[in-house]
Length: 150
Image (cartoon, rainbow, N blue to C red; front, side):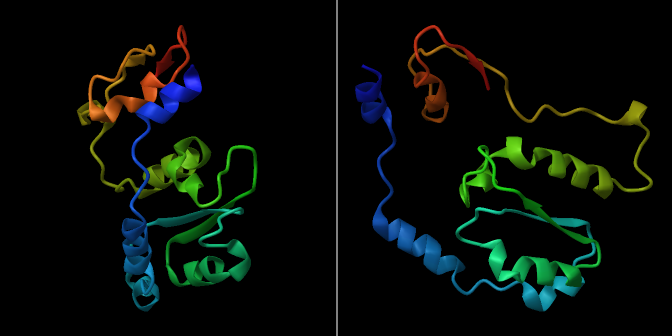
């Protein structure tokens, strides 16, 4: 049964102390004193349903004005957003990243003929077979017969 296999193969739940440590580490993080020093283009992307950095507070919208080449992007709530977890969903914000990378290209960049394409991910087919390594868990959770390109 799929549910039983899912429970057996899931990674262990995080230790609560690890979660407390994670939150404590960022509790007093404050980039505000150095915002005017940022010279590169900066896109501050947030989703409207983010419960950790709620847009209703207006902090990001106010502070991005201090970044010379800064831009605030608020992604509306949709069936694709997942609150604060939206930061892990490039399908939602990937177009903004592409735009930022294009804007960030140096004016004196090498002509396209001289540029090298570097493949940063390996494409493989997940067919529902057991994972080959610890990092390939996702494919093992697909129903039999389903394939997905990663």
